[in-house]
Length: 241
Image 1 (spheres, one colour):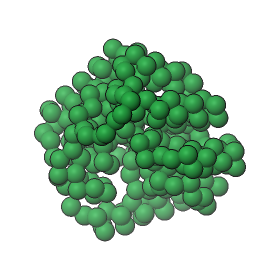
Image 2: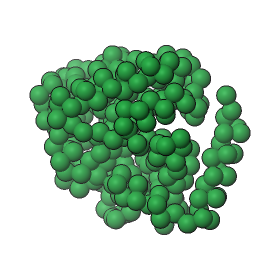
Image 3: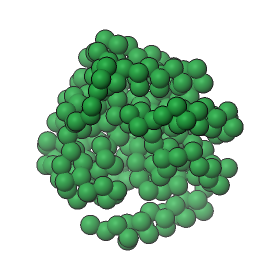
Image 4: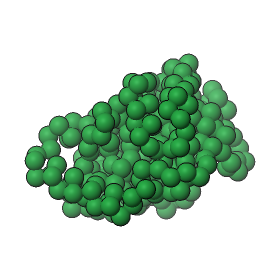
């Protein structure tokens, strides 16, 4: 039976207040240990009519972390440019293509913003699913051991970083695997929240925390590891740089 992680992208100071409050309300009311991707210094374009201020934003993020959510560093500024990257989900991103030193600097500056706001982070969420070998190396050097991305059915280790794969953006039921479901609050409607709540109620303990996902990596048997390696290899063959 598959396990599921719920993931939310694009949280930042100045995001739509109602989206911030709605996500927090649902996660806390239904005890959903989601990943929350926070951008420390947002520079991307997103129309906002009622922005959440810094105090309200960070208070909410701290509360979510206290109640079991995993706060992930979702890049630094989320200002995207076109460049090839390892996954090739999108032909653009914030990190892939930058020199190692610049990538490491952005990661460290993001962690510094988090620390000043009372947030600890051990997970990276690459903007636009875009990263390269320098990103992975930089993650190791700043002490971030986890990455939420990758086309796979089970967690896997690459160059010292543990990947928790992300392959869905809907509440589909899978027969096996650790399935991260990616949601964006700016695009969610009432029916999306209703689907999330219904999924939580129907799947019960199948929705797990990041730590449970990490623990599942260490208990994978040789058959699953081998089959999952083949899946990743086939993906690389069909999406080679």
